[in-house]
Amino acid sequence: MNQKNKAFFNWSGGKDSSLCLLHILSNPKWDIRFLFTTLNGSNKRVSMHGVSDTLLEKQSKSINIPLKKLYLPEQTSMEEYNLKMSNILSEAKADGINYSIFGDIFLEDLRNYREQQLARAGLKAIFPLWGLDTHSVAKDFINKDFKAIVVSVDNRYLDKSFAGRIYDEQFLIDLPQNVDPCGENGEFHTFVFDGPIFKKPIALEKGDIVYKAYQSPDKSHPEKNIGFWFCDLN
Image (cartoon, rainbow, N blue to C red; front, side, top):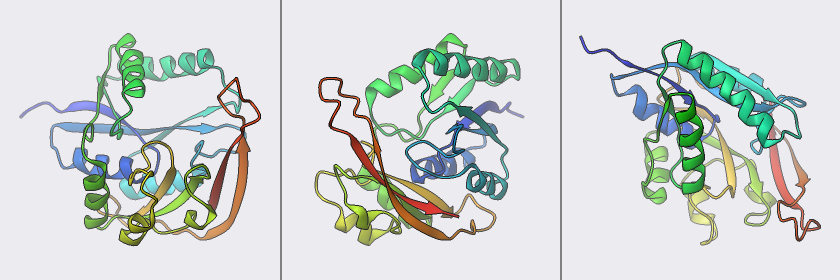
C-alpha cells in the first residue's frame, strides 16, 4: 500500500480553495490533516473576505476536515506575521506534514514568497491550479455544482451591486472586461456554501452590505484609500 503524503490545506472559504480541495480529495495520494486560515483577531473574520470564523467552522464540519485558525492583530507587521507562521509550520513539520497546498492560480511574487517561507521550515508548497486559464477555472467551478456568494468587492473595479450576488454564469457575463473571472487580482472574494466537497449545504443568511476604507499601500499617495463593499453573512 502506497504511503500518503501528509499535507495541510490553506483555506479561505472561497471558490478557488474549494475547487482546489476537490482536486486534492479526489487524488488518493494526499492525506489532508487540517485546513488552515488566518483571521483578523479583533473581529474574528477572514481579512478582505469579511467571513466570520463561525461560518468557516461550519464549512470545516461539513467537509469533515478540522480547521486550524491563526488570529492576527489588525495591524500586523511582516516580521510578526512571519514569526507566527514559522511556529505553525514548525508544528506541522513535527507532526510529519511535508506539504502545504494553495489554491493560487497566478501572482508569481506571492508564490515565490510562500515557497521561500515553507522551504525554511522544510516543507514544500503545492499549487494544483497554478497556470490554469481563469475563465476555464470559473466555468469548471460552476459546472461542478459549487454554490458561492460574493462577499466583498474592491470598488476600484466593481460597484456595490456586485456584493452579495451569487457567483454564476450571469455574474461572469456582467463582469467588466478588466476584471479577472476568478478575481485573482483581488477584485472580489467569495464564500462557498454548497458543492461536492460538502456533506450538506452551509446554512446562512445575507445581512447588510457595508463599505469600509483601508489605507492605500502607496506611500506616495496615502490619501488614495482603497474601499471595499462587504456583504455580511450570518
